[in-house]
Image 1 (cartoon, rainbow, N blue to C red):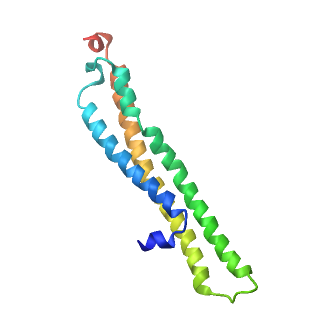
Image 2 (image 1 turned 60 degrees about the vertical axis):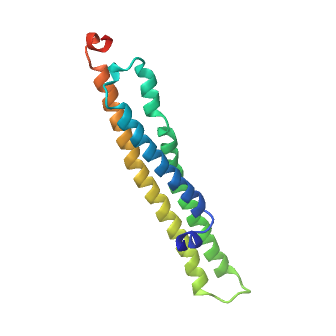
Image 3 (image 1 turned 45 degrees about the horizontal axis):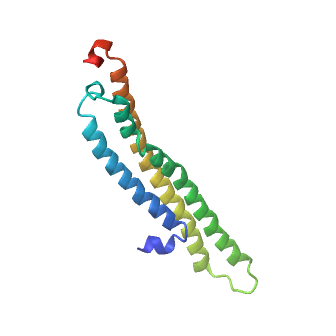
Length: 147
């Protein structure tokens, strides 16, 4: 809970991204394990199965792209707070307030990068599985596919 307090505004969208990413990964693991038990050619409509397997991978990719950007926004806002405190001629220099701004900046950057790294591992895993699955189907002789 302390991380949420120290992370500033942009920690909340990052939290939403992480929850959504975990939900997508769990759902995709279940879907892939269900449909990939049988060869693609054994399904009546292979194109539909491929679409089902591709579903939500775009959302996962979007999270991978926006998480570090949200982290960088948190970095910028945290550093802006620091510079505002340093530039304010009315207040006395407060090292604790400055350190909180730096902490916010580093925290949001780290969280954004962690989300991206974890999401990218799973995105590449699912993409690779799907590519191999479709490749095996496409490389089958025509007689086997039609049977």
